[in-house]
Amino acid sequence: MKMFKSVLTKVILKPSTLNPSRFTPMREMHSRNKKAMEFIAKGWSALKEVDRVKDYAEIKDQRLIPLLVAAKENFELALEADNTNTHARYWLARLHLKYHVPGQCQAVGAALLVEAADMGDPDAQYELGCYLRIQNKYVQSDQQAFHYIEKAVDQLHPGALYLLGCVYLTGDCVKQDMASALWCFHRASEKGHAGAAITYGSLLLRGAQIPASLAKSTLKKGSTIKRARHEGPVLDPIEAAKEKFEIAAKAGCNLGFIWLERLEKAQQLLAQE
Image (cartoon, rainbow, N blue to C red; front, side, top):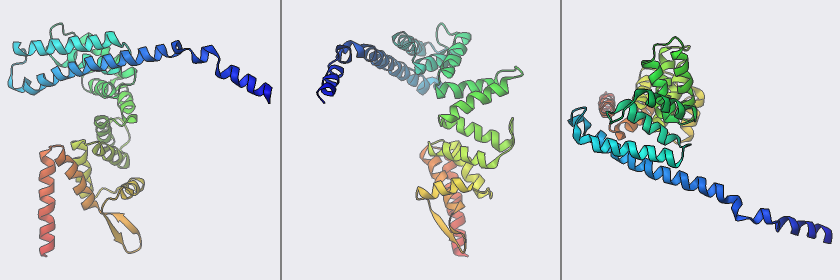
């Protein structure tokens, strides 16, 4: 027993175990990441202001230049502070690809976007998938696009979920699969994607059958149900569609309000009969 206590004491009091320098790299990494996020926040704020006014200005309006330069400098400083930061790469890529910023370079933007996507950033994966699908004319571009979109879907990116749902719905590049399409639209709508919510709701109203697994998970969350004679509780497609249109309406989508108004009128007509 004395021998055991002696060994245990040596292990606990071992200098290398208690040496604060062991944690220095972790502190430095956290510090670099924190500094990078501060720069990203400043750059994003400047870019948000550009987005707010760009629809009311010329593409190369000189009044936007200071904001664009500030955004570019902050994203570059974020990368200098933490070269592993995927968000800084993604936003700097967007700046090069979509904005008329001084020093703009499409090749640099594309390279940064690919790097961010390969490093696991879901926004970059989705963006790259869209670029490959629409703008790239190479033979393998569809397969590459699908590869990156699927990676973003694995991280439940709402835009990627919606796009993959459309792919399954139309059977473009893959075998048509309504169940998979509905699953994608449902998960995207849960994250507030208005387009997915509208699509899911309208498919239900057109008679699309909700997959059993999806219906069960929806019922567990307390959605409106109805009872069939022998089937027990089942999902009411009209009420389920209404919930989706409410999600779209909350996101500010006019179609959400239009569909809710149509459902309300239809229910009123049924009540009168």
